[in-house]
Picture 1 (cartoon, rainbow, N blue to C red):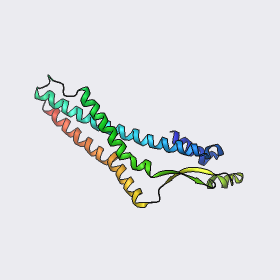
Picture 2: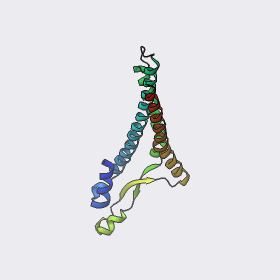
Picture 3: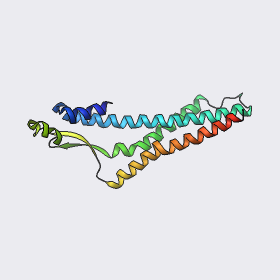
Picture 4: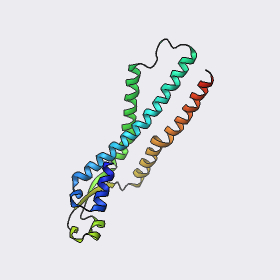
Length: 164
């Protein structure tokens, strides 16, 4: 929401206050954190489906006097989730930089007195291979694979319920 507001304020309101380098840097941080939190949420949902499946499996087998999901297992799952999130989201943060422009073109058309005011904005890398890799990496790791995984886990959990 913060990054969306800054982008809107820069492009639509054309206030030179929002052209500053700190706004572009804070937008970069905001976008990166949003991606990290989104991926962490997706990975946590996938981890919860694993916990549900194995808990149900243990209950059905009748061997439920010793809890398998301990605090130690929980800490390891959370550690693996956040390491995975960092590794999957790192290319996105690395390929986006803050760039200085001589002026904000759209705003100069609306307000000619902003012609000499420099503007900072987020800029993606020019490397087409890196952009394509990042696109597929993000969508595979954050969308397609978790969705397929959750479908399979849902099917497995429903099968376990049929055994009850």
